[in-house]
Image (cartoon, rainbow, N blue to C red):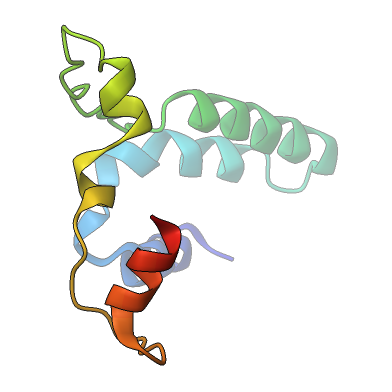
Length: 105
């Protein structure tokens, strides 16, 4: 593959993310090793190692949620408000919720 063909294929693949200045050193190194398989493989390994260390990725760590300053009380842990409420649900029981509540009490 010729250098102009390699550049064209890279441009087609990367579209607007292709920057000639970013790819020039890699393409030159591979073209300089043309015909020498050992040198070409060594060059590709070197380029791969360099690329893997310079990804350009930005890692964003979201802010930690605020941790309550007061731990919940034993009562709050054992009898949460959410479990005290009897709301509407999709399930129907014979006799309704009241019969179940009476049985549990």
